[in-house]
Length: 370
Image (tube, rainbow, N blue to C red; front, side):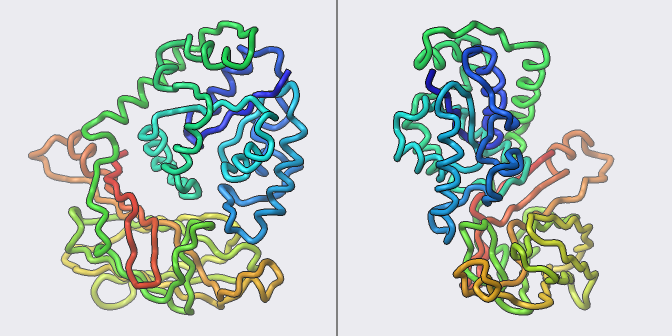
């Protein structure tokens, strides 16, 4: 029996689709890899440590693809597998082997996917709109229907397999999780209200162009600074969360972050861990101030080519993946505490694109209310 390959996005209902499909297709085996994610090196110890959402511009893409090709071919007969972390590798494989798998796109509404991704702050998931268009060329499971209608799975899987066992997956737990999601999603504008993606909230100096592959902007000088114009924000920020990376495999490198509002440095943070995304959570005191300045001091700048890691000749320091500004909770006794929590508790800007021109663009600025 030809294997089933589920494709989609992280937070895209794919794990639930995998679990349900296994029960409805007992003739297919699940592999030893958790959730069937055979190209996820964090789940599959036999697969290369390939960066999530690696793209063709990556210097090692062909090597990564060959490893992916060999891994996928292991499961071409009698299995159910899925992928949400290597869409470019998988699409390349499907193009080369169009008849290898029955491919089913787990079509969760795009606004639901984006909402859930922002709650997790998973910035490694890029080009969602374009990938959604490419995925939509395949047979699909309509998740918006599957939320409430169990026959959606039967019809979608029935496109490929004659024997599909009916299964009522809408347990009390399932409906509780579903209803809680929609309560969050639809509450007062959803947890995400929209703000104009204006570039003049932020400005920066001392960085390379935005690195689409890594999802960060690498600093290019020993001192890299970001300035936030507080007067242009619609709220007084009380907390700062910075997502950052140090260049992969750059042992012994560290950076120091200082921030200031008005005169003088408020506080220093020193970090030296590399190889993954980190977050700094900083309480702010910006009352009466017009500017917030973040200053990153790199202990040294290194180029991947000098270490023999790749052909990248850039000298790199710390990379910034996101900058979130969160409002303080309102204290006024004349207003509803619940309403204030819903409106102001966690207002966040996420900075997704940084450019060498000295501007930091908000690709998808959102008001994020927990």
